[in-house]
Amino acid sequence: VESFMNAGIVTALFSGNTLLGQDNGFSKGFSMQVVEETEPENAVFLVNEALQFLDGLPENQKAYLHIQAFDPHQPWYPAEQDLGTWSDPTLLPFSLSTDHLAEQEALDDALNRMEQSEKDQMKEQIRNVYDEELLGLDRALQTLIQGLSNRGILEKTLVVFTADHGETLFDTDDHYGHGSTVREELVRLPLIFYNPSFTNQQIE
Image (tube, rainbow, N blue to C red; front, side, top):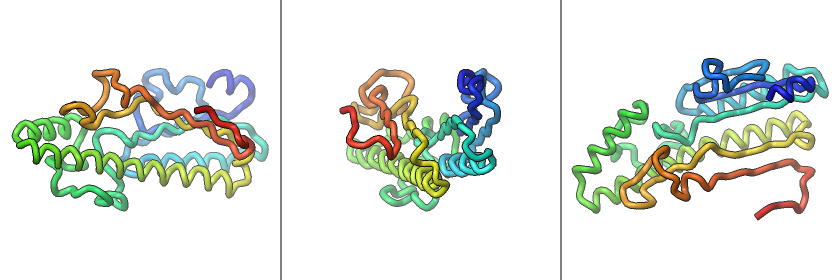
């Protein structure tokens, strides 16, 4: 990021995670930053902030924008318009607005008291809530791409989409979450480069 700044490229950080903020050095090199943790709709908010930032730049000003959405991530908290698409929130043993540790404790306690059939149903509900968070991220990406297109700059913008880790959702036994294993679903991450000028080029 500092190399971009030194080259005259405007840099900006839009983060939904305080780990990427001014207190720990991850914001080094960014000329401005927005850190917003509000759940849900975090990703959509950050994308709209980034697009407004672009609107304030001089014409033909080169820019590097880093948008670090928090969802999908525990605590699982889909946007209201997505919640219930596949899940039944009344079956969950925790409030969707609770924090990560309280959510995990409530889920562990519930699973320990359940018969196998009930466990299977609960696991499916957790997967569904996670998928509903993905819908929110999809909507944010749609907003970003459409916003760049509406501004006439998509064809000269490189969009890179990736993630810092995956999530285990009872793929093996009762294990879920991240940070304690290196299972395939945790370390096999998306890395997508998009630009309309890239035609018939892809890496499998």
